[in-house]
Image 1 (spheres, rainbow, N blue to C red):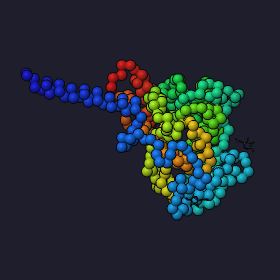
Image 2 (image 1 turned 180 degrees about the horizontal axis):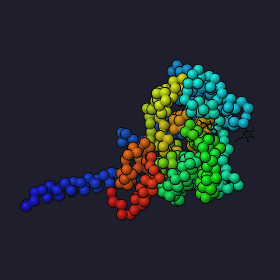
Image 3 (image 1 turned 30 degrees about the vertical axis):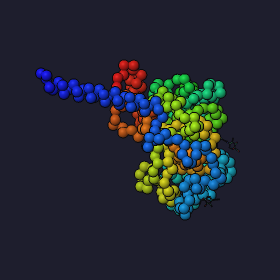
Length: 397
Ligand SMILES: *[C@@H]1O[C@H](CO)[C@@H](O)[C@H](O)[C@H]1NC(C)=O
Ligand SMILES: *[C@@H]1O[C@H](CO)[C@@H](O)[C@H](O)[C@H]1NC(C)=O
Ligand SMILES: *[C@@H]1O[C@H](CO)[C@@H](O)[C@H](O)[C@H]1NC(C)=O
């Protein structure tokens, strides 16, 4: 052999090629088969059961078994039978509930302002839809169209036009069995510019905006989940699955559909799927993100799927509505949904394909993202670029 280095190169190349084939094979098979849990077992129904149930006394279900902490939420949950109807115009209703909370918490005035505002209105959960003048832009119920297999329910904010348009042009675009809806609060805002006319135009043009007349602020995000559940029960009871995502997510819609269609029928009807946090605790640093005062809540969070993107089974809609009426309000919507699932005796299922806190400095490489189901955050530009490259038949990874 005249060139020993060449031989070395060739064998290195062959090894790399083999590795690439193996990686492709491994990732393909990961996609086509349901994700397997830690010990190589299918994450089948746990001992807690896979049929939802809602006991009369939720305390033990929600982990409150020992001596009861004096924190407000824990006390409230202990006493709570059903929350008020949620209608703020009714006497003794949700406003009174908030005022009572404020009076009962000794250090309420030292709470951050958004938490104080949350508590004062937390039981107010019934808001009318916000409709543009002239009445156009009403979102069609599923009876008028076709019942989707998968509803893409994307939480957005009135001013995020570019994010919504990027979703429409990419992963949320028209496809068989798919319906796209954006969930928003009022475009009138508070002290900001009036986005009403722009949102009205958008709503008329695309008929995919579900708007409600409440302030679109972070601690009001749970309202979007609850008002969507209520909308679904009236207008779209037959939907099989609902993907909840933020408008800066990128979803591999066809891969998600394949995954959902392959689910075992024994646990698909109680599905709660995403990037699951199992050991999260409240953060106690005043002024820091997600701060929760000790006088408000004691204990650990339930296992919950990150709010950046998760899938739930449509058949759980009436169950979740019943649970939400009996689980004391909590400011973070993903933790709250986790509490409702725990109240129903259901556990979230983790899927490695959900990456909801992807480092912002990573570039959206199609080959790295090909096998994921959902990743965020991505800018509208990155989403469009990624979508185009994933559609390219010449894409070689
Ligand atoms: C609810 O359950 C807890 C824990 O099992 C128990 O200590 C408490 O007395 C029950 N409350 C009611 C109202 O039955
Ligand atoms: C709230 O209650 C009032 C008075 O009972 C009623 O007129 C109104 O329609 C209710 N609003 C909602 C959103 O249910
Ligand atoms: C949520 O929206 C309602 C209605 O617009 C408002 O009264 C309340 O202050 C908002 N909550 C928060 C935490 O901003």
